[in-house]
Image (cartoon, rainbow, N blue to C red; front, side, top):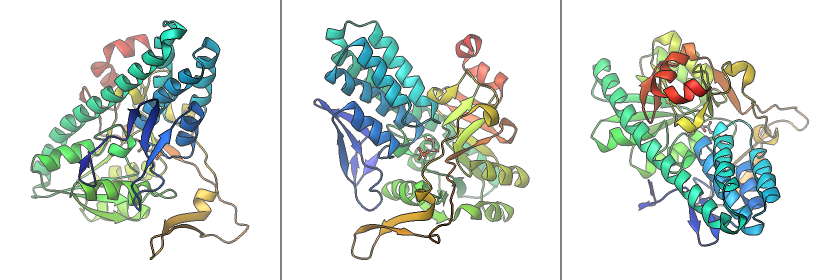
Length: 364
Ligand SMILES: CSC[C@@H](O)[C@@H](O)C(=O)COP(=O)(O)O
């Protein structure tokens, strides 16, 4: 997608290094960070220089390639996968990509592992971009139907967090249908939840939509219910960090409250995800998904640009107030209207997912 008018992806190989967009600097500065070692990749994921489930998965894969340049032994492969997997716990795409890398490289002699690892990581990145593009096509049909049902000429979409191209390699998940719809002439407007505490909506989603010239309005996280009660939202669409085989959806903290408000107001609530976000090993999302707890400093402090362009962090809370920072929550399948995947749209249920992914469901 476009950044400052130029088509770009979020991650790519650059010689022996890996380049990523530094998302901690957006929307105030567009900067590229260079990852030279596996430790750099671990830090980039943990510190959220890169974030979003599919992009975390792709970064993990490139992290393995960087590790192989340092030491291509079996022990180093095991160690790198262990360190990368521990960098963030909730998005299952990381485990998925590391298992794929490990499977591919275990069957490759150590002398060939660097090339093989970069090839596999690039394949993972390419496939992610293709899956997200296909999600966009499937979601476009959903958007067209919602517009027709609304009886209006403009579709009002609400989204939470950033599930746009910055969260993936390209296109995004929840925002892919927004981009496809905009490009095919559908008139739409996006309500953007700011998404405390890290404000991925206010800083990243708003930036992405602005880059593509898409009408949007940033709202505080608690405004969605009010807007839905007054008929201002035709459809909610979010991404996912882990979706269970029964269709429970784990996503950014606050998603569950949006789903409850949507349910109460008869607003369709869709979740867009590539199959790399499906965790076939678990069924009950509330009990089984590991929920990341991040530093309380992300709640007590906030970062932004000063009038003279400096990026500064200020404290919001009284010194000594305790803060808790649960990064994700789980929306039960019963509150989800449909899952939009690269293979099409299905019910958020075991049967719905098995219909689109029969081999995976059988193996689960
Ligand atoms: C396509 S991304 C879906 C999710 O990864 C996204 O909604 C989200 O929750 C990201 O969380 P983050 O903590 O910014 O990594």
